[in-house]
Image (cartoon, rainbow, N blue to C red; front, side, top):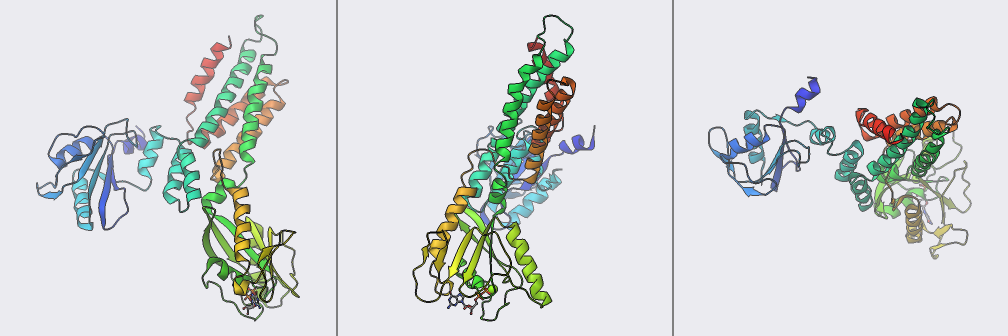
Length: 440
Ligand SMILES: Nc1nc2c(ncn2[C@@H]2O[C@H](COP(=O)(O)OP(=O)(O)O)[C@@H](O)[C@H]2O)c(=O)[nH]1
Ligand SMILES: [Mg+2]
């Protein structure tokens, strides 16, 4: 028995709702002792599975703690796949403390962070990408994040890579058939040829998903918008106007902003962080020069860049911008010019609606409404990139070196198993061998 198997046999509990005073707080149990502990602390028989029942909970001395709703989820139909129970107690600090003491005395252990979900993954209730989706759903602050997280939690990415796995296993079965039975007369010469369509379909699917680039990560982590331009162009004034708060110091003195000033907002249901930066100019002041260096680096890393221009001011360095805001003097109409630039007056909040409208349409166009699975982590991109290049390699030597080609396909499958959070290849081998027979 490994240490992990041993740990899995432990029954754990945790407060699953937020800590502190609340109308109701939920305590969750998972592991083989869940049912016995539920019976003993309620001094009654187990409730009907998955039905809320009112019970009294007693401590070890037989003194009442609270009268909660309790639920019993016998394995495997539970969140973790183990026996689970829930107590919906009144949410007071004193009740939670008494419950924790009572459950600890009954032999249960406090769960570690993420331990319920980890058990769910290890028991096959969900794969790693679904668990990541669940974590993102709990962290979601905007509607766009919620929608993206739900898709992955519901298995969008899992279904996608399972489709590729199936194609790769079919391809492998064809190739192995040719290698193993090459001497037999009834096997067609170019059985491996039959593997082409499977491999190209898997390759194209991976390429299409990789083509979404950093979309999924931008939604999960937030969209970075850098505000750059010459000193005194009105960048800090613009930032304050955009978020409706006085976050950055503004002054007629050139070189006021040196550190990056960030402010958050929500556009098109997605979290957006604006970064106000030091004005771009040649300077002998070493602190300001560091500010300029940071400004350029931020513009480089940002998803979108707003360049603020003001008459008579030169922007010293070239920056790839997405939107130009022309900060004009006087009572003018804020508007979108023919070339797409926005004219306005940052100090008087003129043209900010036009600017926000343009930002919103750019964000919608680039980052919103992912209909397929989302690559929300670098891990996802890495696994799929390796799988993709392995399949490319397999295709390139399918005709000449089928043995090596099948090795490439196995490597692609290993990367997808990694994406799934499973390194156990047994399932894959089962599939390979059963397909193998069909080929015959
Ligand atoms: N007249 C006028 N003054 C502005 C406008 N925007 C900013 N300012 C002023 O120009 C000065 C520099 O603005 P600031 O936002 O600090 O520029 P930054 O260096 O680009 O951050 C401040 O005194 C602002 O009040 C504008 O649209 N019109
Ligand atoms: Mg400034």
